[in-house]
Length: 479
Image (tube, rainbow, N blue to C red):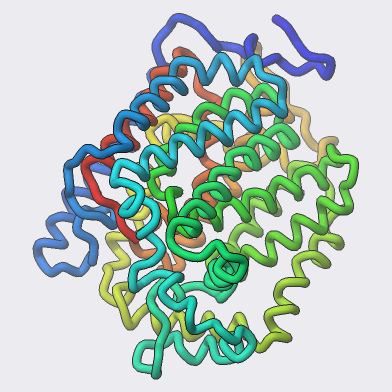
């Protein structure tokens, strides 16, 4: 069995890789549970929606409309899927590291663009962020940014004069200001906004790989790469502003991982950069303050708090700037809670969405990720023990199993931190429906569980593609 200079298994000699046997039974059981969850959410959801319409979605558990169709992006999407399934694992094992990052990013962009173009450029890309609920509909109200920020919270609650449309009211002004600034530099309109979201969102896969390499090892990152490129989440990454948010949040964690593990020449700069991006993330979406939980997971895995002072310095820059400009984050959030319950959030039943959200997440991450999550949950007790000081760990490793400190356990810790963030968002009651896009910044960190899958991994990759293609061709998704 080959190893690299650091004693880690190389990607093409990872245990179980390329073995001729079919997927393990327990992985199939986990995937079957995912199918059952989605089926139950659909059947129960349709019954509730027909009875009283309280779900406020037309195709539960997703926000979308049944609309079988083919489009100009269909041949491209099929071609991209076939190419990644056929050649992705091999290329991920052989490419130089930097080439792998760029190739995975490019593949994710090709996959996302092709899925979006199933509805054509205008409907699938250019129009998405220009509807009456979206950010671009209020660009002309930001002619003078200072006064607009000072009065931003006054227009969140429905009933106030000139209240903001849903997505503008539902987010701090950093989201809308992004598109205002794009407009100011000559990149205005829905096409540029859509391209911006797809490109920045697509870069998140490279950020995840950088983080995995720093915290686990390179073979684990390489095994996850094809699954990140071909994720069903690309259906919602395509021109949803939440895809852009996911990219910013992912690079914040990547820089934190580099700073904490000191696997960069400039760990101090990486720590400040991580803080800056995290601070900006909190002004893109209120709920993304929960990215602090995966951030704590990163520090726990690196067993250091050394970067924390510089991270906090960086994280304070954006809040201070917005506060000095007259925007009060906490006041605006309190107004948002009122607005949320004035609209669909006040009608949608918590008892359904507390688990219906998880069904929507299942569709976004795919069954291969669910199978990987099954393995993570099996590793969870040992992964939690891994967080203890090293001298306290005295567990013997049975032959053939991965023990404390292995890449699998470190990956499990990172995934469990992301799951904790999702659980907190779910229990809050502020994420009832539409989580297939709202939770994109968290869900990206679940997909690397696919690195734990043994056997013929191309079958799992193909399954991921099938989920995305079916959803995108059968349901016209909205947000």
